[in-house]
Structure formats: C-alpha cells, structure tokens
Length: 235
Length: 140
Image (tube, each protein chain N blue to C red):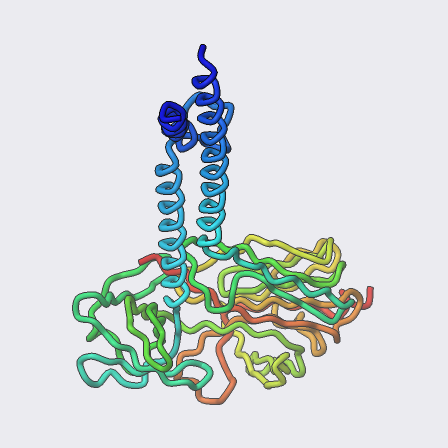
C-alpha cells in the first residue's frame, strides 16, 4: 500500500510541468511559451490600450477656439470673444505658451506683447468651461464664407446685396482685386467674369475679410465670389 | 512486474490526468477573465438614411477639429445628382454627387479654415442645404 501511495504522488508531480507548459493556441508549434509570458503580454497590450486611450482623451480635450481679443490687460490672461459672443479667459504660461503670427503659408514667432486688442486669434489648448489653458496662440485674419441669393446689383458703387442662407442680408463691395467667377453650366467649371455679368436671382458663394473696422453692419469687401447662374437649375 | 506496481502506475496516471484536466480548465478561465479587462470597443454610430433632397450630412471632419496636415477628407451624404459647392478662402470646389455619399479631399490653409458646403437639389435653386465647418490647420 505504501508503495502505491508513493507511486501516485510521484506520478502527479511528474505530470504537473507538462500541464503548466501547455499553450492552447499553439498546439502544433514546437516553441512552448510559458503561461506567465502570455499573461505579461496581455498586461502589456492592456497597458498600451490604456495609454492610447489617455492620449486620445488628451487630444479630445485639446481644442482650438478662435475669436477677437477684447482685453490684454494683466500679465496672465487674454480675454477674447468668439463669433457666438462667448467670452473666454486665456490662461497663459510663461514657459509653455507660444505665440505666432500667421502670414500666408508660414508662421512667425511673436511675443505676447505683440497681441493687441481687436486681433483675431486662434487659441490651441485645453478648454475648461470659459477658460482655455493655452499651448499656442496664433494671430490670424478673419475670413468669412457665406452663400445666398443676389437680391440687388448696384453698378454705381460696385456692390452686391445678398440674402444669405442664414436669412441675414449682406452687402459686398467688389474691389479691383476681387476674384469674380461664374459657373459654366455646360462644363461645370469656373470662369472669370466682369461685374456686368452678375444678375439678381443668381446664387452666390463669397469670401470676405472682417477687419472690425467696417462702417456698416454686414457690409464687407469681397475677396472672391462664385456665381451659380439660375440657368443651371432650369436647363 | 508485480501486481502492486501495476496498480500504483495506473492510479498515478489516473490522478495525474485529473489534476491535468483541472489545471487546463483553470487556465482557460483565467484567460477569459483577462480578456474582459480589455477596454470596450468603440461603437461607431450608425448613419441616418438620407431622405430625398432634404438632408446634407457631413460626417467628417468634425466642426472645430484640429488638423496637422494641409488637407482634409470631407465625407458626407447628400441627394444623388445634387450640385455640391464646397468653398473656403483658398479653394472653390464644384462637383455633381454621383452617389448619395461623397468623400472629397480638400486643401487647408494655415490657421482657421471656414468651409461652407452647399448642396443644391437637382433642378431647383430653392431647396439648398448648407453646412458650415471650421477646421484648424496648426503646425506648431
């Protein structure tokens, strides 16, 4: 009997390493991977997924908000107001916040003191309610894009009155350097036109610069426009 | 071989096998638990059906998004045959939607990009749909 018990215990211990070394998914593989390393691999994967998620959340919280500077008083904040009339405080960090001026296709580094009241700025940072912890501030030009229907063409002062899709009425002044384009209804390509080709009732898509020095509400100098003639819709 | 030795070997193999089966089952359970620890998969929201001529949907990019590249893919849905006009300060793009969904590569200027997407329903100037997008192309 004693021999039987010894033999049973011996056999059990003999089988243990065989079982613990099994890798279910790689049964045919010659390389036997210990269970511990699989668990470590899973933990590693899990850690990587958590790290990716944290990075994603940081990216999500990092937002860009643009608006016009209303105050630069004080040393640590800039107040600015967005087009939705929401005022934000921008928290600046002496060491972390960078300042840039956008001009064309490049940026130039500037100083905080170069930002003036009335400047249009883009703030890139972490937004918390009405406060932005700024990573970077860019001084930019405010260019607006609208679309609507031409309701009046005035050849005396080269202005066009437009009823916008937002139900607002805009007056755009056509300058000598305004890019004036018309849709060719046959080829569906743009072609240059003169002011005389613009007709009431046509649809218009236009880009204007808002400087803040406009003399009339909703009256801007046009940078460019594209006219979709009524003929396109009735052909 | 003695009878006692044969019985001992038989019992040894039998109990060994039971322990082996127990450990394999336990291993599988612990692996299953590890998998449930993984973060849940992101569920992509389903896209609404486009009612004829009524809807212009823009699924990407998100309004107010930041791009680190100088172009963006504008994706969305509109009526098949609609005239799509996509305008920004640096680009005008005119296309006729061949299908009820579209995906258009559109260039970005440095800084703020106000992009207006207009869909004119085929044959009518009245039923226009407009979407405004702001995309920021920031390099620093």
